[in-house]
Length: 87
Image (cartoon, rainbow, N blue to C red):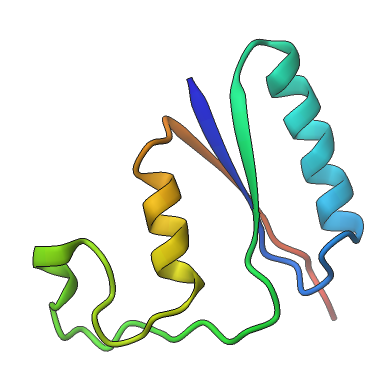
């Protein structure tokens, strides 16, 4: 079994990362393979509903981290998504 862990924080190794690492340690301890993906600081474009992805399985309009995440997610059985809450 493989789980993709997505860090949605703009801080690569901040509090969200620390919490996700604890989840990763627990999963690894149970024999689950994990991969941690930081989304980074680059903007992620919203879907414009063009339908271009229906054939290729990836966004044909924007080439951002979403396409990379989709490639990784394809081989995974589960997902953990961490997102910070800022006021």
